[in-house]
Image (cartoon, rainbow, N blue to C red; front, side):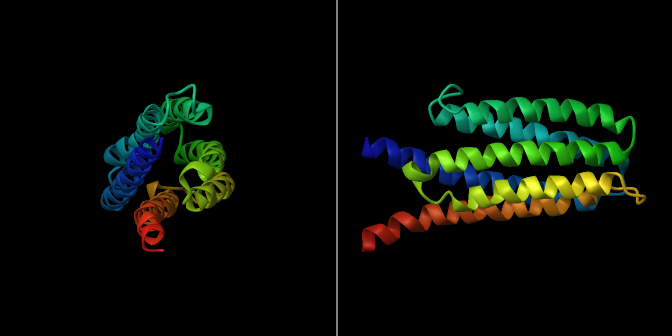
Length: 185
C-alpha cells in the first residue's frame, strides 16, 4: 500500500511538472504569436484540448475515470470548451474570452474538488486547491472583460495560464520536498 502511494505521489510530481512546463511553453508561444491570428487561434484550441488529455492521463494513473469523477467531468468540460472555442473563433475574440471564462470557472471548481479529495492521501494539494479557486475567480474576470469595449486577444489569457503554471510547479516542488523533509525528521 505504501509503495502504491509513493508511486502515485511520484506520478503527481511528474504530472504537475509537465503541466507547468507545457503552460510555460504555451505562454511563450502565445506571446510570440499574438499578432498572428491563425497561430493564436491554434493555441487557443490547443490549451483546453491539452487540459482534457492531461486530466485523462491523470485520472487513469490514479484509479481511472470512475475513481475520479471530477476529472472525468473535467475531461468532458475541456473537450466541449475546445469545440466552443472553435465556434467562438468564427464569431469574435469577445466570444472566445467568454468561453475561456466559463471554462476557467468550471475547470477551476473541478480542480478544487479533486485537490480536496487528494489532500489526505498525498498532501501538498493546497496549491491545487488555491489554483482551482483562483481559476474560478479568473474566469469571472475573463467573462467581465469579454463584455467590455476593448477587443481581447490571446494575451488576455496569458496571466491565467501563468498562474496555472506557477501552481503546478509549486505542487511539483512541494511533492519533491515533502518526503525528504519527512525522512529527515
